[in-house]
Length: 420
Image 1 (spheres, rainbow, N blue to C red):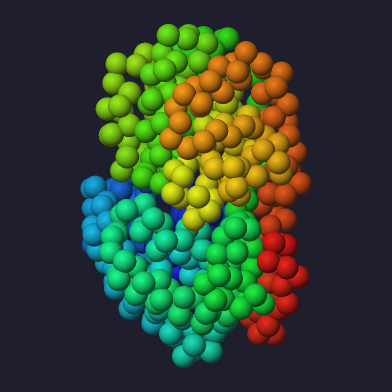
Image 2: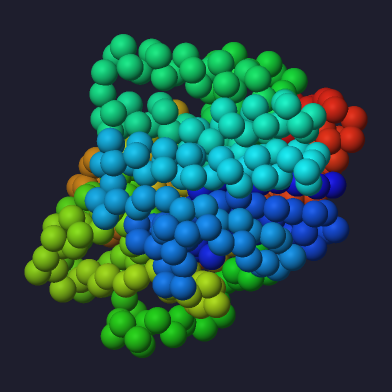
């Protein structure tokens, strides 16, 4: 098949949407498909275009058998609500010539990822006019999140934007998203059930495996052999509620058994560092290279997974898959009725959940885990088993390939259920 992927994030970005779209494109190219990608230069999560790339020039490159076409964009240093909209709009506009240049290539499927939803109208129009099938994949419900998190305000504006979103979503041949609750939200927005598909994120269970010896990062960071490492790794943005980590570290600053390592970049890092000023039990690192990911995730005795209450079921943290594969316990913040809570406590049985924005509860749970290494080991083993059984990269992408083939060749495919 000829597959055209369209989205602002792509490899070599190490976290979030770019990581998953890159792995998917590479896998499908190696499976024998012609894959082209329209994207931006890598900039996330640092909000700075990576060295060797340009924010102002078009560029085409070959990457693992994939033709990658990069369009310029504007990247704000501090992405607020309006600045973020301008940022997304700059890519949506600059990428239009690249999209329409694919007319002669005639792709079978045009696959667009949200965010940014701003690319969806052009992708839908191109696919319709060119006779290709259209597929919208939702990693984040960015419209709902923007208003619920207060990034954009106004009830009238919200009604208008959500109405436009619903109109767009109902016109794609296929709409997929990464969790059961997010599937339910797509159905609630009026997408016909036969077009909705559960397409979860995955993990390379061969590349990330439980360590059998202490991580080399312990010595690098000067951590005591018997210290329990509470690790946060990933984007430091505004959907995670990271301020709770500073509060918890301050509550536990007199307990040498528990050491916090916070690794990542993003718009919220400076504020988090300021909140942790003077705390000797907290260490900050940048995102670590991909080739050291296994050792990095294996540094954790407990993975920290904070999430704001008002972001519940709008997003499913993509970092959870790596946590599970690493065979380490997870401590998350989530409301009892959310999918994140269900996955951590029930489906994977890999950890514990405390209420969002409750530092005292999180601190108490870390103290309990520090005193019970056997319980941590059991949770970690449960998480690894769940990753092997449910989140294998090859298994998930093989199912996705079958859906693509059915959609592109026959035009229709029956989805057994929204959670299959």
